[in-house]
Image (cartoon, rainbow, N blue to C red):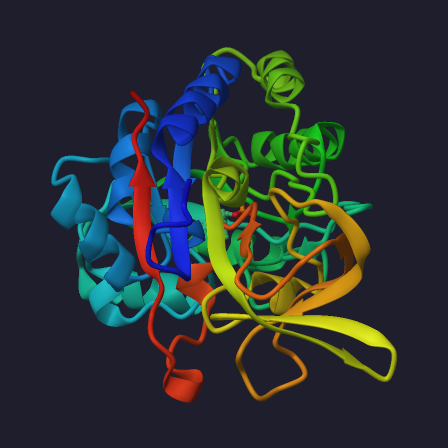
Length: 351
Ligand SMILES: *Cc1c(COP(=O)(O)O)cnc(C)c1O
């Protein structure tokens, strides 16, 4: 289907994204859903997501301007460590405060804002792939930092304390995230806060693309945890958009070196950095069984590996389709390294 198109290319299944986002929205009844834009800010994807989400979570002034340009009236939460004064003074629905120093700068500006305090709590996070909290990390504040902020906020009324934010880990399944949520809610209730953003980090499996995060039990679990009067919000990125993208390319060369078979494809990790960053093999969407072959790109570095020892038959000229390239893929890649051409972008809209 993609053979006649310009390759390498990103192919986004917008109809699939629409269906997936609709299912996630339905599973999270009573919970607010924001999309974490840094996972993939492609405007076409954002337009599909917009009707399914309550708002967007952005991590920079750049992402904020991008979202504002597309959806002027949308609800937007701005988070991220290292906010500049310009970012702190941006008009947003919610500002996620990352440190007492940041809050002091906000208060000194005299500008009103609605804030959530980002907490870094020491809660058990077994099985997570990336840990943002529970130890010394630059994300959010430990309970002493949160207490300092509460104290600063108590003494004024320009900046309104709306609640708590906690994005503590990524790669957790529904049961793991619910356990974490229970701990975060306990902590928020102890501070008398009723609006709680539980972050993102819903697990996806690059080893087993069919193993989807269980949104249904997560939604049911959150509904059971939520007390009357509480607003719960989640802000997934990867688990919303990863499945809708494919990176499609073509085999340029096949060679055997010291007994191992390699396929060199057009493009590489400067287009799709995800496998190099996460240390996984990017799953293939299709393929005939064959002798294990390592699929590499055109870069002059041994790190330019897309997938290792994949049991598929590949010949020069064959099209190779990588699945799960819809999040943290093109937008996290080092596009200019070696100055190869950029990929094409195709959008499948369904009938
Ligand atoms: C990156 C990030 C997210 C989204 O994480 P995913 O693993 O993509 O779901 C949500 N909230 C914050 C604060 C983040 O930094």
